[in-house]
Image (cartoon, rainbow, N blue to C red):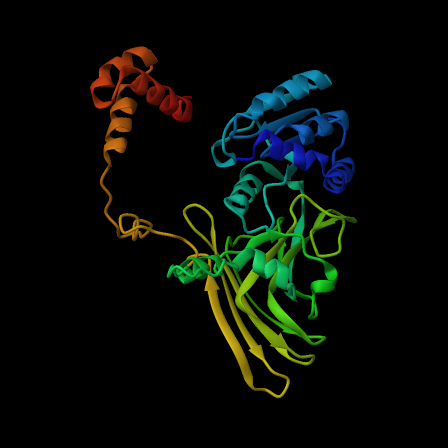
Length: 375
């Protein structure tokens, strides 16, 4: 969930807002029905109404939906917007929509539950002749030479007290970061990694292989990954190096160490993104092949290796694992059992008070559980 500040930053991004507004102007027709998936502060819903939409469904699971409602009232269009506080997969609308708009992806389209939400909404909400905004993403890659950026991500201070921080550096080297990447730091050809057509895609994962020819001598430090989006015909948006600065920035997949590159070398990249319980697991396998055909260096990195799992947590993500409730889970189960639609939060807190240090602690937990699960 984005904070209010995060939503404000997206609205302040003039390039982003101009592009989505242009796409809405092209697709919204008088009286049409629009679904705003992940509506956030409701700005796209309001714009759609101002352009003549007859009905807009603003679907948003977070509490920010209340701010969206207030923005719609202040803008004089609340009577045409139905606010649905739910995940897209749990939402229901009347009939079918003519336009489905969303901006759920982050720095990269393979992000959190973005693709799953779009696929579900396309199947359940959009009429066969309807339009999606955006329509298509292309993923691009190039080799980066930026020692300062690499150090900022991986460098840890040298210590003379016997403390060895190499395990921490290993974890850091398996995490990609959001960065502003200067176009002059790109030292290879830019190659398309994948294309994602939101009108037709079915797969949620990514698997791609691309060869990046080095075009001048430099020390390589990793891979830049970015998207080029087509929101509607002729309406584009990109976070590529050198494009107008966007709130998304660009993705930097670091190498564990710098590699001396020469013009004519090739960097062979195998990139995969696999949906997980919480987010995508990224793996980037890199082989640097010198221009004479010799093998210079090879790295195999993944965000799985950048995930810290305690012994208690290890293996809990496996389908074959057998889980039992912790004390906290048992307390929450007791609370949920009592939430039968007839008891007040106070009465539930009194009933489970003995499981907590105090009545106040019990009531706070009851309220938190109620806020999460109430209808």
